[in-house]
Length: 474
Image 1 (cartoon, rainbow, N blue to C red):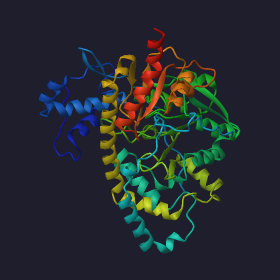
Image 2 (image 1 turned 90 degrees about the horizontal axis):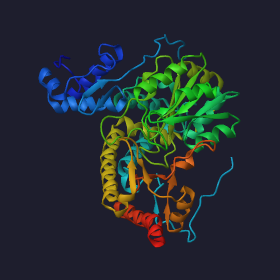
Image 3 (image 1 turned 180 degrees about the vertical axis):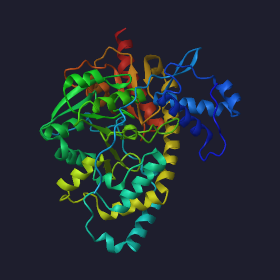
Image 4 (image 1 turned 60 degrees about the horizontal axis):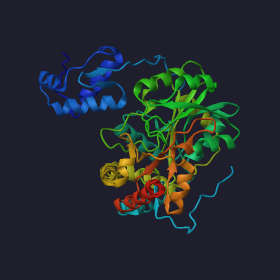
């Protein structure tokens, strides 16, 4: 029976238990396929509550360390370790016009990922801005270092340590105005004359940026665990761009076993890299945020990119990337002539917002808000007459889910029908490469800026298009 010492710990019980079990699974103390004690037995043996054990088990399951079998219990997953090598080095297009309905009026935009003004902390932000202008007027007029002001990079580093469990040197952090700008820096830094692999389906804008910069893009398919490693190998690329924590558009969260496979792929050759897009990862409906891929990287192969556009506001164009140490050194040798594209005013304001713990409070408040909205929107679907003809496909992360509609109408035809009636929605099939089979009749529902009233309006219109035609023909 597994027994742990719960005396003199400084973290919540479930977090301590989760960490101990995770370490034992990773190191082989708990063998792959070994059955874990039942929640009740484990709790009784260690003198803790079953709720504590359940919380630890659920977090381990969400990360892929543990799996459950009906009526049999919990089991340790098969974890393939990454080679433990020593780190080296030290720090010293064409634009398509969006479709509109005939009246140019959209009643409900189910693809809207903007920020509701009511949810932005304007009063706190203005107070921080006033403090910056009053106390930092001298440094505001000085040019920002190419990687961003030190105060902001230090604040991001401290936030990542406390909120995501990441140990990052501020000198590895590069701040820029949006992820698109950071992609451009990466292309100049290490992607020229190389091939990059993208997930299929995937985010089209990333491919457009790479392709418009002359980078050859290839694709690897996805299964229920994320990018398929065999297809990644076959495509011949040495750089891969992935979203392991909350993939867009499928919503898949890559389990730890697949993450280790991906890291092992990167270590098979000297000059392979993984670009990890961690967009939309902070908001999980249940449990703690999933540790990013970079936190498992022991060989400096992962480039981590994230943005504040989802956590704060879509119009705040501040993003950052974390470079492996050798690439950070190369960046400052090769690209330090670039000026930082974010103004000092915004950089110091965001630094104060983070270091003052306002950002953490805002994240917690928004997680609660989005959790409530998630439940409200799902209840709208469950209670609507369309529920008999559709299925919700989701996981516990991010601010969108997939609605599978039982219909014979082709995706592009249905989308145009809905657009004509005032509902803007995108199909999952739109995000596949042309050579791939489409995942039909699955549509993305973004609920970050949605209300129950709007959702019910959209459901009525979808029902009239999908079911109304069938009934009329009958």
